[in-house]
Length: 90
Image (tube, rainbow, N blue to C red; front, side):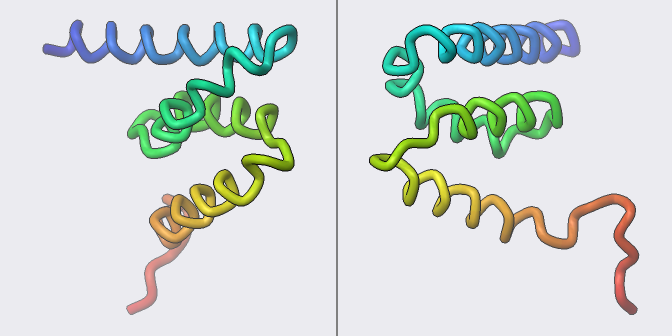
C-alpha cells in the first residue's frame, strides 16, 4: 500500500509541476483545471499544498479573484490552530 501512496504523490506532484511550467506559456490551458488545483490545498502532503498554492497565485485574474479568495479563506479557517509550533491553550 505504501508504494501505491508514493506513486499517487509522485503523480500529483509531477502534474502540478507540469502545470506550473505550462502556466508560463499557456495560462488558459491551466485555468480549466482550477478546481483540481484548489483540491490540492486540502491534500495531506505539504509539498502538494504548496505547489497548488503557487499555481493559484499564478492563476489569479479579475474573473476568478473572489472565488480563489473564498477558497483560501475556507482553507485558512480549517488550518487555523494546526501549526505544529503553536502551543495549545489549556
